[in-house]
Structure formats: C-alpha cells, structure tokens
Length: 360
Image 1 (spheres, helix red, strand yellow):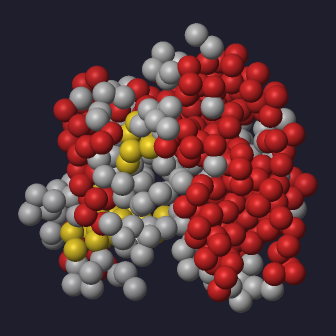
Image 2 (cartoon, helix red, strand yellow; image 1 turned 180 degrees about the vertical axis):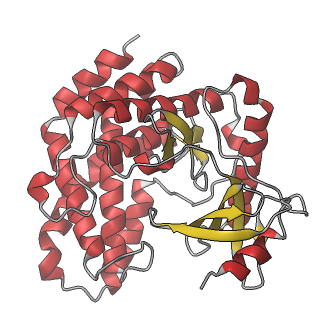
C-alpha cells in the first residue's frame, strides 16, 4: 500500500528538493500505478510505478525513455507541443528501484492539463490526430533501431495467436461457452496476419512508434486543445500502422471498450474523418504510398489484436489486465470483435476517407 511516507522515501532519490504533502492516484490505465504528487514548494509531479509483470525487459524501457527524453530536450525550441520530461535520480538514471524491487519514474506535471477516456466531439478527435501525427513527425529523424523492443512481438498477430493457442490448451473456461468467438478468431486469422507478413518482407519501413495511442494518453488544456503525448513505456521500433490503427480503435469507437450492449459498438465515421484530418497534417508528406495504402487494414488489425489479447487474458484467468469482475476481459473481447465486424462492414467507406485525406 502506497502512503505518504512511501512517496517521500521515493522522492528523496530524485533530483527534487521538496517533500510530498498530498497525493492522489490516477484511476485510468490498465497497467501501471500512477500518482499526482503535490510538494511543499508548490510543485506538482507525476510519479509512476512501472508494472514489471508486463514490462519484463525493464532495462530497455528505461533506456528507451531516457533516449527519447534527451532527444526532445535537445529539440525543445522546435517542438509544436510539450513532452513528458523525466526527472533523473542522483545516479543519473530516470528510474529508481526500491527495496521491494519496484521501479519508479518521476515526471514534471504539465499544468492546466486533463485527459479524456472518451471523445464526445469531433474537435477532440481532431486534436488527438494532430498530436499523434506530430509524434510521427518529431521522431521521424530517429534511427528506430537505436531503441530496444520493450515487449517482444507486442503487435505481432502470429505471436498473439501462439499465446492464444497456449491459453486455449490450459484454460478452465468451458469451450462451449465461447465457441462463437473461437470460430470468428480462426476465420479472421489470414487477413489479420497480412501486416506481419509485410513487415517480414520489409515492405513497410520501421519507425519509432508509441504503441499505445489511446485518447487518454494525450493531455489537453482547459480549452480542449492538445498539449502533449504521454505514457512512453511502449515506445519502440514498429510500423506506423500500430499507432494509427490503435488510435482509431480506441478513439473512434462509439462505446467504451467494456460496453456490454454490443449494439452500441460501432465505428464513428465522422470521428474517423476528423482523426485523419488532424493526423495527415504532419504525416501526409512523411508516409510512403505503401504505408498509406495499408492504413485501413491497420484499423482492422489493431482491433483484432486487442480483442485477441483481452480474450487470451480471460482464458488465462485475468493475469495481465486489471479487471473489475470475472468476465471483464470476456466483455472487452466481445466488444472489440463487434467493433471489428462493423469496421469490416464499412471498410470501403473507411478506405475512401483515408485516400481523401492522405492522397498526395
């Protein structure tokens, strides 16, 4: 249990000369534990405990974030937006390891900031597109190979299938209760593996990608204008389709990802237009024709991967994602597959919208 003494013990290891007198926990997020810390010199910081059960290659996570932090600090005068600034420890690291083996990051708090879990208008979606597009632009000069893979095969459909098949062999869940989902997963496999094959063939270039581009990983100001992209644990080499597809999956759905009424789960095409509008501002002249061609498939693929991950965790007994009830991950999986079906039904429209905004 984290208390005030715990927070202050951790703070003493970072290059800040202040003590915490109040802290609150951020409730959003499936993985890490994150706290807003107020100190006695009227400063505020974001303190985060990295989930080492998820990020087993913790050295790579720390290395990547420090590399990116250094890169942004050197370019601070040319940046369009703010960025997550990590505070170093007295050992010149950006992470502190406590006596229990927990790793902690301390970041400056960006003032006048807030997050959204769900977009309720097109302007917010447009801003999200701009910020995630700007992330592509700002990191386009980075050699992605200088960064490490923090989670091996994170967005690899073949790898996710292997994990799914392993979970299926040992699950205690009754197969008859999930037969429809199993059939849908197997029917979708070939199409969903296409991006992985293109990566293997080096048809699509590797870039530095965020890999968790949901709406809540963008900070907005009080006027709902974008401030910064946050949550950089998963930054690593990847393809642009990972970020684009996951943004659409999480931002342009008409329902939260644990909505149980599947009739409410569709893709909002007006939101899709707004995201493409914002995203293309900074990426249209950077992305290759091949990358643009497969953006619509990226939407399908990332929804599928997320559904498969939720479903695999359900089969494994909910050991990865935080859940509020026993069938939470099953509901999430059904939700994602319902979204995928709607995207498939509207795929021609999605392709036309994409071409309209990204054609050169």
